[in-house]
Amino acid sequence: MKRTVKDLANLKGKVVLLRVDFNVPIDENGKILDATRIVQTLPTIKYLIEKQAKIVLISHLGRPNGYEIRKSLWPIALVLMRLLPTRVYFANKAVGKEVEDQINNMKNGDVLLLENIRFYEGETNCDLNFAKEIAKLGDVFVNDAFGVAHREHATTYAIARIMPNAIGLLMEKEIEGLSGAIKEPKHPFVVIIGGAKVKSKIKFMMKLLEVADTIIIAGAMAYTFMVASGFSVGQSVVYDDSVEYARDILNIAYSQGKKILLPTDHICLRENAKKKKPIVTKDLVDDMVAYDIGPKTIKMFKEEIKNAKQILWNGPLGKYEDARFCEGTKEIAKAIANSKAYTIVGGGDSVSAVKKVGCEDKIDLVSTGGGATLKFIEDETLPCISVIQEKIKL
Image (cartoon, rainbow, N blue to C red; front, side, top):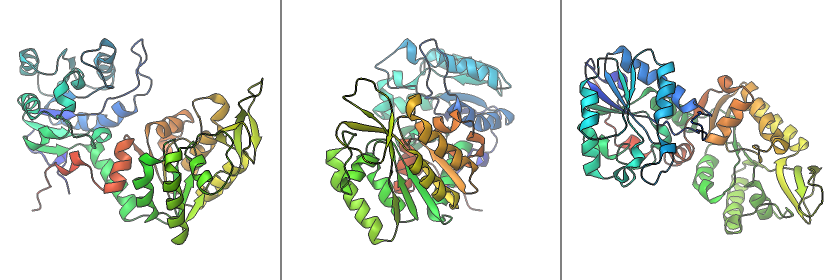
């Protein structure tokens, strides 16, 4: 069991380097469109404030090429100033004397947010010397950035190898929730997988075949599986290089007595039609392109969800960002939220869908990871978790 922030003693006056994942969507005017990742890290920050530590927040935003003003964390500092019951400061840099002076001037319980750590190439290169430069700023390192715990970067991985360390409360919650779902699942266990690319989710699906009872496959990836099953999909998106993988997964599932559900009707457009009006169809032929699941499929999926004792959902069930094709994702989000099962929703698009229908509070675990959630389920750990010290057993 990994050491958590609550296992750290005598934090008063100590400088805690807290790695967070504030990689949130921000519009061109600096408005934060979804603050979920910020809000979910607040318990750890507030705990450290109560312990009178000096909290230095480290995060990235996007994938900048050097310094980019639109990738600055300054807008996030403004949000933290409203959300936290303490003084919040912002550093225009992440390393150097200017930052050191700011930290030296901090009072116990103060918070300092460093500038985007990915403005420095040493971060993504996992440069040990860069990690040592960051480490000089503090006394202890706490990792609460589950969303990037699969990335071996300087401030997620290398720094933990050279400093006393622990995981934060959000990281602890994610690990316990996902581990419990895989190691001690409640049955019937229903997995809902959406999104597009099949290849990125093959190991994820193979792992879940070991523990799940039903796997529902929807979203764009469903049409690759439908081709693998011998169905016509019209001109819908199919990843030809993944058809054999899909066929293998289906064969393994059926040989193990698992239930696989694919869409039986679809909301689609005719590519060659003059008027691009959505139509409902059972059969996808000719120039039809499917963009959402149809009403019969929604009903079928809901029945499976209603009988579940545990549900894991990753990936939208259609092109939900388009109002014409959001019904399937919305209806399934509501069904999951209103079920009596233990529910886990992972991946940015799935979390956004849950928030859009206003039922986030009804989900037992809203995972802040996308790729990290998939990798954790595949491997039951992540590199940046493995490097954290174990809890001392007394």
